[in-house]
Length: 492
Ligand code: ADP
Ligand code: MG
Image 1 (cartoon, rainbow, N blue to C red):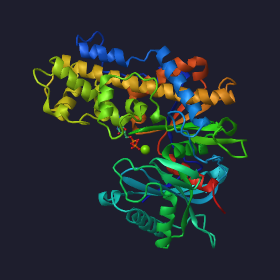
Image 2 (tube, rainbow, N blue to C red; image 1 turned 180 degrees about the vertical axis):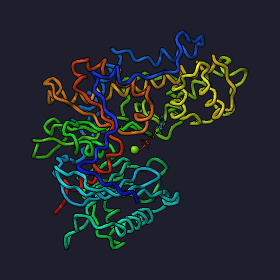
Image 3 (cartoon, rainbow, N blue to C red; image 1 turned 90 degrees about the vertical axis):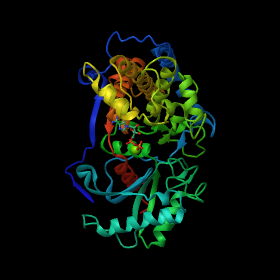
Image 4 (cartoon, protein in one colour; image 1 turned 180 degrees about the horizontal axis):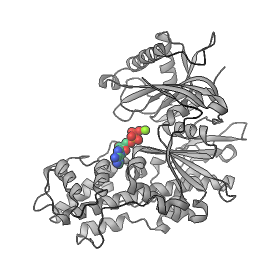
């Protein structure tokens, strides 16, 4: 169990930038050498097909705004789900008391307790524990999975050290539950599972209220806890960042997958059939589902056809970490077949789907040695192929093409969300600082991707607006965000 005390505040932001200082602070080295123009027709065509000049990116951003509006108008219209999260009240900093967060979204789950001390003290203390989920439970029954989680929660609570806040008689401990699978949210503390993803296939859960499943398991195990807020990681990131900074309007995830959530004016949501249309609420865009205008290549099409969800999430398949390496692999394989990229034959390993990962692309692009030694090592280690300098340069060009397209398209998506906000609030035109909270290892660990994304933002927003936009890397704040949302939505 890790224990962190912080006073007066824990500020989790590790990096942020405004665009005015970008050029000096974010010079990114690239392994591409000048004049390495390839003579490979496949590569040249691929580069052309992937091109995202500013006017094209503008069209993408406008089309995303249109899809956002369509999704807000009528349920099921438009390519973006634009899910109502029922998060109407965002953290103010005044929240007080002991709250919990439970994060389930992959092979681990994480439990966290947070002592919130109000405006002056903020997070007084937080403890967390990460527990890996046994493989068999990922494909077992809901009783087994949630029973396991409840048992681990019970032992976490049992180990808790006494803090400032005591649980009052007759009250339950309240949890913010981050559940990062597709959910149809029905209220702040309920939502039905639409489908399992990421290797989970727990029987009898689809169409069921995931909060009820957890609450029942906690009851069975005699645990005095209840879920007060159900959120996804994007909402958790937005809320967690907002807790420290009231200018946060957007939460973006760029990791294995991608998503964006933002603060919307209720009266701009026609499908929200509620009497109260004043105030704001958080919308989960599920922007990975966008597909209308995109620079798709034959390699994207083939990868999509072989994927678990063909025809879906085409934007996600171009910009998120899960897919960038796989696109590069497919291009390299074709280059081997039609030219002598790696000599006479294609390395056998190159035929293995997902053998090249985004981490490998990043490592190759960071190579500053004259003979691209590190590129050579990665290719040797993962493809078992010896390469000359020319081949290495071409490989880096392919990586750069895919990453440039991904980063720039991600930038266009962020601009779309910012412009949707701007339409209704005129924040930026009145010079108000607007913060995008960002989480995910792709953004965090891939400097070229970040840099391309920033270029697109400046090109599309123009320097005037861009200087009021802050991209803040808020690593792992989603747990705190979920706990604070449990406080905001406390039933007591
Ligand atoms: P998740 O989205 O599953 O919560 P992360 O935010 O940790 O997970 O993102 C993981 C993804 O980030 C990986 O799938 C990979 O694509 C990308 N990634 C991880 N490490 C690196 C790295 N060093 N360089 C570039 N991309 C990375
Ligand atoms: Mg994550």
